[in-house]
Image 1 (cartoon, helix red, strand yellow):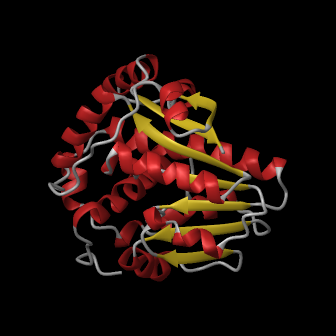
Image 2: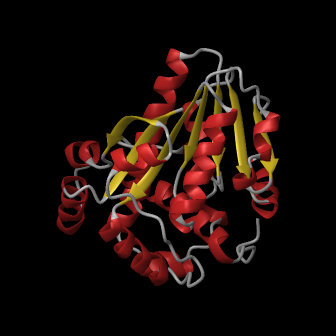
Length: 267
């Protein structure tokens, strides 16, 4: 992959979580370790991101994904034969961290991103790459909806309007009766801070719009069941020695004030 091989607009943001996983794997390997991300370090275009980021935003990305990993693993353990579907997959390396070669993994993203993903990460035997717009729901035709299905949306919904997301979740519920959804969200204050950060990384085109202040209300308006709401940072605060004091303060209040969370819904 050429360092100048950047995608435009929102797709630029797929590099931010990858760089974050490299950072955490090098600094806090006992807490989080991503061998695949480390193997890609030399290929990642990092100039504007590294010069404008903070440790807190690296750790927010990593802790978000680690929390989702745990939920995915728990779902797989409960349902030996199942689907794990990543929407807006980008260069996420959860497949490599989870290391399960039996369940069905699906990676869905826009065509240019899928081309880049296949080039960078390859395509495992039990992993299917699907190019397309996740909001059209055409990807559902490619999966066995009779199987328990967990849909994972990480760092994606923030870039879209609430109405579009609500319609999408209702559509998924109607087509995947045995489905669950996990996604990350900020509250409105967290969204304001996240927008400020992404602009600092040099990406002026990736404005974020979506936030959730009341998960119960959101579940109600999507006609889904609210399984759980989980904060990001408890584990990192307990186990990552060497975090900067400023990072620890931000983490503590992000959880305490519900600025960052994983929302788990059932269809």
